[in-house]
Length: 421
Image (cartoon, rainbow, N blue to C red):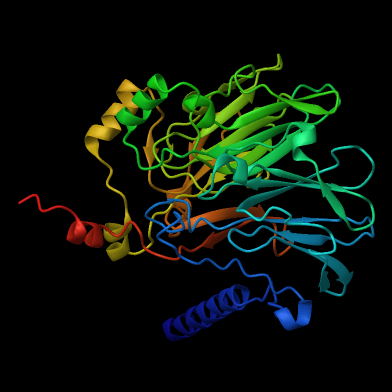
């Protein structure tokens, strides 16, 4: 009898693990070639030590660029816009059956060259056709990195009119979002920016902001209120004039009051911002009171109800390596003195160099459970997308990774750094 029980137990284990293996190996996506789709965009980069086009002179050199998907010609098919850094942007029209045609030249895109980062769609003039807003940056002068607004002419051509609408922002813009923050019936605009003070130590950073006129505005993300179809910079007015190293942006009702809020994932030592809409034309950053800990080098962010409890949860990515060796060689030093200064002198939230998955505890206060779920360390991660990819009723998480060079390798830094012995 004992042998029979043992046999059946082993048989059940084989069945169980066989089912698990079949489930894991299930194919959800199929890769289509450029020859099949007609999409051959490549965001190629070329180094140059003479014009800041390298990682040492421009810290965001390898940060990549964005992509946007929308129906720009109202034919019921989704088209694709790729943003390019040193290469031209590309717009591909969907012909159906996963075949696309490149209309970038005839659409009158890229008249100014430059460095594109993010893509947003908005019907800026309410004519029924989506327009394209490009967030720009790069190792360029302010006038060369002004954001672009391509106004759709309804015939697969566009005219650039950012300055006409007051949206030619000249920050190091990474992404933008259009939404009706004051519920007056028109769309306002948030332009998320990085800033040019990367690599500056926290104390020196704030000393510069105090002593150099206009530097705070240049170091901030910018908020534009729609005033009769023209956009007016109201960053200070709405309570968002503060340092920003924005890499991730999400607009959602984070506290369930029916008004749209903003989450900005900030790189470097500036904490993420959770701007709660106060319903009086202002926002207030409540990241510290609504979380107990957040990511340090905030990258991509996504907001979704990941556990189907009707409350919004927040995923923020960082750059923690999954294996022991690279976690030591690539992780930035968590300086005890800097940590103490940021927490106690600057009154910042607790920041740690791991991904965070903030679960809404149904009272709009969040608890990080990324370590419990095994997703705290996913290498140098950029975008996290929460969706039900296999249609089983549960939300899944897709994370993109990669960086061209290990610029922060601690062994290399110690090797080339000054001799302190």
